[in-house]
Length: 193
Image (cartoon, rainbow, N blue to C red; front, side, top):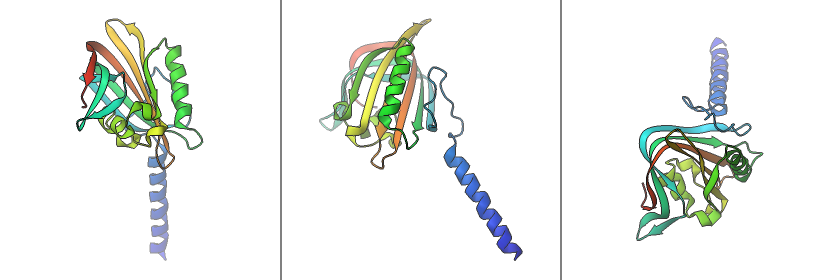
């Protein structure tokens, strides 16, 4: 009798722990103070890099002779913060994308490039090769991308890349990439990671 009671308590505890792990942001993650979090979204991927090469894509990704290529990109050396959010089921990737676009404009951002759907190239390439997070992969028709340049701060160029996608299972995700640094090369060809 006691063992059944202990077993039930154990099952309840595991359920609560599982629920709290699913419901919350991943450990060590945080929002960037420049943009307010989309309502009821959850951080599912977080990555910070310092003094790194960051490619700012300004054209669609294409497969050429078995390799990836973007016709136009800028190479920046600096810091990057990637934050991927899972959106609530009642909202679409496009809802969040449009909201973050409007916020970037309010920050004084100038749109450098944008694409939508198949005009961006392959979603799997954006997910794995550009942002390094496979959960951002979905049908090509369900993707949106914009690159904004923010007003310069001190000696640093500042950018926000916004990528949103609806996966085949209907779940929507958005990735925000905040980039600060100095442009090393402008309008060059990107040949994958």
